[in-house]
Image (cartoon, rainbow, N blue to C red; front, side, top):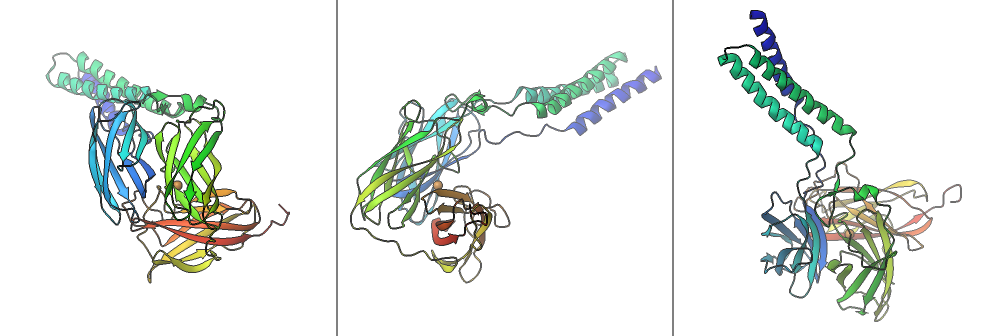
Length: 453
Ligand SMILES: [Cu+2]
């Protein structure tokens, strides 16, 4: 009898030790249900719309809008509606002059595809987002269930051992607890061999395996329509058309905090980096004031769901006199938005990776740069043949948390880039400070490599 009790205690102690040591399975992803940041050039404003993760359905949807310093304050109306539905009245959101953040809470009552309607009184951006359903994978349910069962059985075994008349119930219960822990641990361990968690289908909000199955999506044709006049702000209408079916492209995913990144290069060397807003499926609009007459090239960077990043371009004419941009100058020190920027870009050779850096000061090293589009800095390059590159700052000592309201970046922002072709390249370094995007244009000469490429 005594030996049975001893065996019983060993079983219960083993189950308890297993339970204590196993710990929860590591959390997966973070993509699903994470905050969604979307840059939006709405009318005369450059905004960042932040759609916070939804905790429960039905439940509140928190929306914050960051206004930039050069955008005027004023009132926006924001509302949420399931896709293909018109929203209700929504809420007013007051933006202050000089940049800053304002927020409100809306309601969502179902999982699936939604649109956030942001209206400035003249234009309405319809930003797609997904309220995800329960996407707990099966192995995680087994693991969680196993631990829960083990805990319950262990308590029952202890109670039976303390108050029971027979020795076999605690033994059986303790053994059950041990088995539950083994099942939970096994499921947790096996999960590392399982395929990655399913993507969320943007149309339904439910898990889908389409991304892993789909081949690359067809090429997007960009159609641009505008009647631009130098010195005036007017709209550029962009239509995205599927190169295979001719239908509107409405499966863009937010990449680098925007649906579409648009770089406009003017005939005199002008540069603008904008984020057209989606006004209807496959249709985007951005307001733009060209400094010069002549042909402008618009380059759109976008990512289709289930496909890769695409860079597509189109031409838009502007009437008015041709105006050259001041010569950018080479590496070295220059004024940049109330700061000095020291640009390092030397020994550049085509085909070889180089480190390009910008270091900012205002008498002292600048340490309050804000992340823009989720990164410490951006570098756009244009080659002699017009090829565009978009480079992101390296994470390092100057890396900051990707939230625009946290100003802790700088003074140095570094990029690694390989110039494909020799010749004169134009660069634009972009950082944000005090809610103002500062652009530093530079011109560099890239040497041909020794082997002549
Ligand atoms: Cu962009």
